[in-house]
Length: 444
Image (cartoon, rainbow, N blue to C red; front, side, top):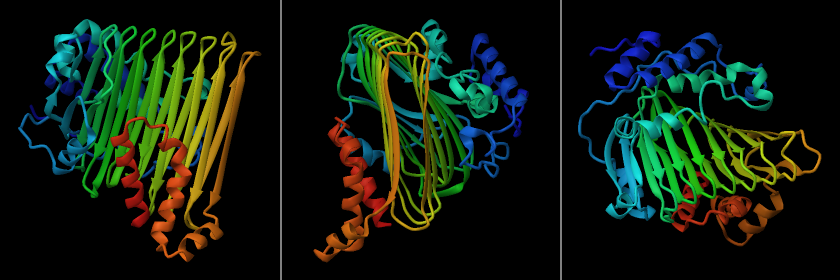
């Protein structure tokens, strides 16, 4: 089938047909398309996009990346990660093609489902239909974003035209500590869209790492991704989103977790690549006793621009959330952070914290930070704060006077700046990998 090359309702129908989707999924895609087509793109006049200009992003100028059905070898960069990551199972995508998936039989016998999203639609239709688009859809704005529907534009594009994805289901009372890893290798030059759906049933426990990798430089490329995390009563999910895309990529990610009674999410976002990247990470505390820890690390060089938005949405009482995002910027790069703690009227005994810290390694680097509170209850503990500062010259001088070259002195200062996030990553191989990326970024 020859697909139209322009974004249109017909393209949505053609994609759905090519992927052999059921009627309910086709209908949801079309709903998302109508939202996308009816909204403008966010601009710097949109408050949440005030510091990020996307007018030059070629959303509608690139061909949509589709599964080819051809067998592909696992890229060398992914093979190196597999050798180091110590995983319990993994999947590898090259473009929109799933080229390898592996899960120990012991987990399958316990009812764990780990497969492509479209395979799950075919084999587990009820489970997918109940949860897909539940957390991230095209009308899920919360707090101040509700007044600016253009914030739904890119998530609606993703929902209408995603071409591949992953489904992970952890049954009731099933636990595993070693992570599931999903590696998405993108070669660039296309509009790519993926979705991840993670469902942790009652009292289950899992660790999930998703990584985006590409060549160091690519033709102009756009990647949209959505991750939905449904955490049942008493369940625990540890999740990491790691973006290491090359120059030329524009990466837009929205993630939201629904946390039920006594559920816990430990989340990590790492952005250390792409020309422009934006990650929106949100937790909904829907059940009493739920808790969300949201960690972020970012390091920009050259002219890179990274933008983070976090939301801690307290709907239920006696819930806890903590955001700690730390980053560094060098050369002419720029970082942006905006975060909101929103406490609903009935969410008494909320305990919520939000911290953003930025380190500038050059006079031309810039960081903007906008922490916010929106409190509707009167018996809460909430705090927020941010800081941005250059490297202290006396600290750099001290280290260099002891014989360290400048890049090594900066490595020590940057890792020291980020250490309280790094030490909260319990997975040693992942922590070492992130530290090695930081060291390389400082050295460049």
